[in-house]
Length: 76
Image (tube, rainbow, N blue to C red; front, side, top):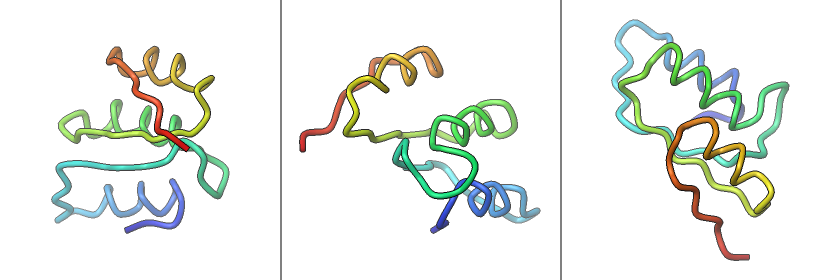
């Protein structure tokens, strides 16, 4: 569990870190949002699956562009 993207990246950089999946909201505290965290994961730990959630349907295009997968908006 991480409170922000910087905390998540610090965990993912630990030498004995075993993570198979990261689940994040697009909006999160700190300087980096969930899209930025996903980009970091795709570039540095491409073997980790990522699920992003967003209540903002406008973000689905950015998520599709980022990972090339279909985005499903969450219901409010």
